[in-house]
Length: 94
Image 1 (cartoon, rainbow, N blue to C red):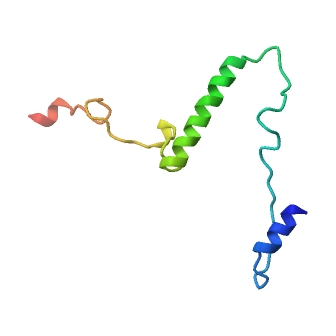
Image 2: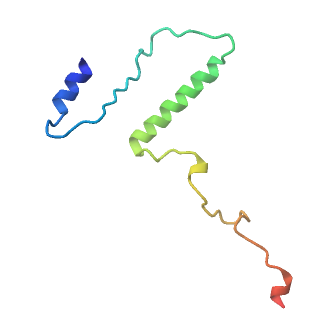
Image 3: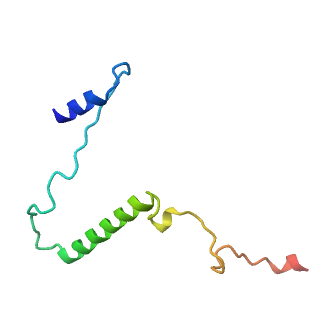
């Protein structure tokens, strides 16, 4: 009902609607109890959560693309890496 009332208040009646998706996230509070598992490394999970929160804060401050995986950056030439230096065959220098 809350989602429908929000939709109704924001919807422009002259535009037709084909589909509407409602998504819910963070359905539990941070201090709510969590089911534990004998095989989970909870120290590692806590460190991972701290890292994710720090990355989220950086992205909020500097933009969505400020922190990304290196493989997504593309083929950036790195000077002196030898990746873009190709030896020419000897017969071409004669």
